[in-house]
Image (tube, rainbow, N blue to C red; front, side, top):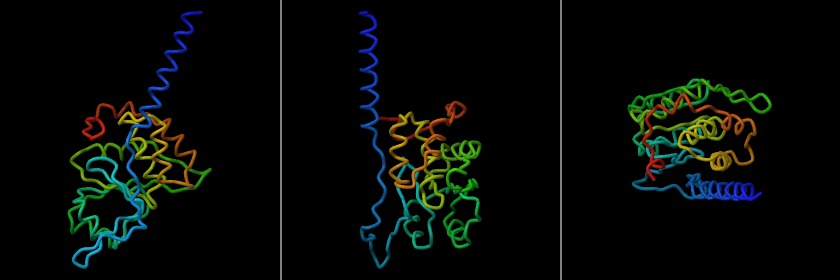
Length: 207
């Protein structure tokens, strides 16, 4: 009876410790687009929809358009990870060429529930590009910066040893009322074992 009591106490202490870890992990907040854009020399810097910093050299957003190009130039991007199957617009391609930005496209269909099918192999390949610091600074985006982008970032967080509570919290901050159970199930079941050998040099791993 005594041993059982000690075991229960240890389990409670372990659960409390994990809960504390979840609360103390810093999650990047979404840029408040209700604020007026920063202006200088008659030039407005307007971030794309749902723009946020993920980690050092990694950013996320919705689909950028020409109004966001000046802002994107300030990031000095080397790469963009594009998670939609549609061809990249000509104006965006011209921006990439003129700024020496490389495009990595992973065509994940944007179906709604219950027809969501996230291809694990594409997420795995996108993670390999994302983890390669030679591609940094890098911007990840889909259409709205919610579901496909959220799944890729969520799988990255698992590699960074975030607990699932924090992974889901960050996903829900961006998806809001559009959060999908299927996305969260995908992140929970995603197997990171084949990617653990890849080098990572992110700020949250150095704390």
